[in-house]
Image (cartoon, rainbow, N blue to C red; front, side):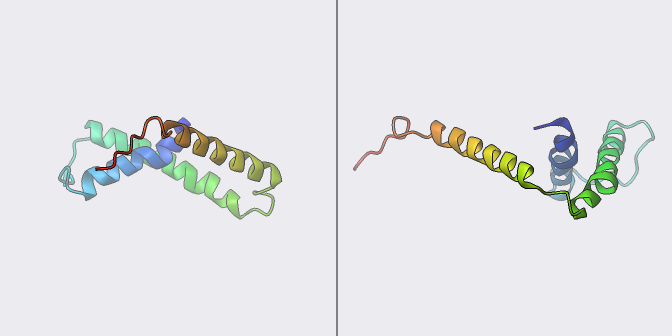
Length: 97
């Protein structure tokens, strides 16, 4: 995925799961130079940029158009073709027992 998408969706989701699903205990106190705090500052920067700059654009009338629709549709088709190519009948062996 593009870096911006990773920084807005992938990485924050990882950190959310890290703390909310019990993988780590949420910090009550942190020193100003801890790595976790630095990472959270970076994540917050990208989230803030997304919320303030990109999210409002989807409410513009000219945000979605036929060109974006076609690109999105082609992208999804390419993904589906790639997924189905990985699961061909040659790879899936069906046995009757």
